Length: 474
Ligand code: GLU
Image 1 (cartoon, rainbow, N blue to C red):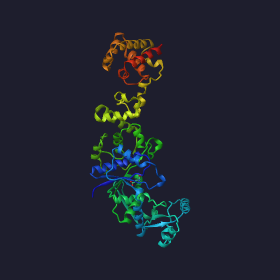
Image 2 (image 1 turned 90 degrees about the vertical axis):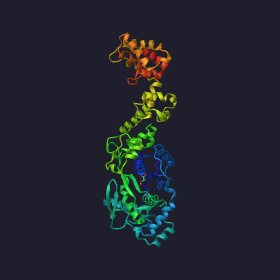
Image 3 (image 1 turned 120 degrees about the horizontal axis):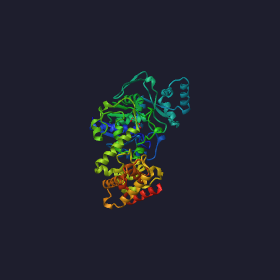
Image 4 (image 1 turned 180 degrees about the vertical axis):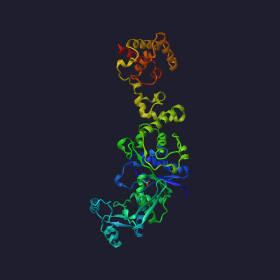
């Protein structure tokens, strides 16, 4: 049988990084084994319905390069199938109609809580005869369908990461499989579809591990062979709490909007809960496919560390800027979306800052001074080992020397030599001349080198900024 995995998100309107990790591991495992990676939309919870969620999800998966094989399955379009399967379970004595009101269920919950017990449905409707149930349905009473948990049995399940799990059926509740709105619950639809789609490996987040015994019971009731299960360790905040929005971004869309590159995100996410068995950190998607194995998935929760992601992203940007080629052209286009007002200067900006940024939106902030000179105090122009007089002299010499340079000789090395020569001639130190040029051009104490700034700004703008600096020194 061909190996097949699936990513089965419930559309929420955005892709959580934890879901991206699930999708990625499903994808890597399928591709590694020449199998298929399917996509199923689990949208049977109508209370959580989000407009356009499906389109957004497909768009972000495509951006991340995780395209699915075959047709996408959408659960809300398959209600007939679920109804048929639920009727079969009822007929075979594995499920029953339940007419208990919300008030009654709430009362049961409160009673259990008062006794410090885990709330559990007491099985009142289990004993209704089929004719009694039918009479209530005919009268138009609202109902759900519950799964009949077998009595006094032990359910055994095996997870490829977490090992064997066994649960006593006494500890399980007759859970709902069809809701009063006629939509199936997650558990029912999930099992029916994994079987129908011929999924061989269910790879999903650890939060679903407690549901596994219920799924196994459903497989048994249907007489289906269950697939293999692989649960992935939770993603955690640096303080080891469950990764949540409150401590920073969690939506893949937010990272993309800040200018994180999809390849860098994929690379970083791949190492959350999986390791290659050596200290290699940078992987292309093809290398990940080659190296991936279930054996090296860890059980312990994995910390999502934004600093580490920044490191990966910076490495990717740097490598692309250094290597050039078509990926560089793509990067230029992507960067232009962040700084559309200076579209024509992107290439220069990437060469100035490409080796020092964590993401593309930082580039916009970092390069702002090139287009709008910040208002800086005159004292900033004076290097700590220099004084006002030498600084003014240095700037005036620079102005005179640079003013005579022909446009075609306005190049980093030439300008550097000219300034160095004039400094030596007048016995000025670099602090007396290069430092004030830097501040004059940038309004900052830290920036790319003064000659890089001269070249970026061009002759007119550079001379005008130096004149402003001289005026500030009065
Ligand atoms: N719809 C579930 C989710 O969004 C999928 C769980 C599963 O893969 O079985 O996490």
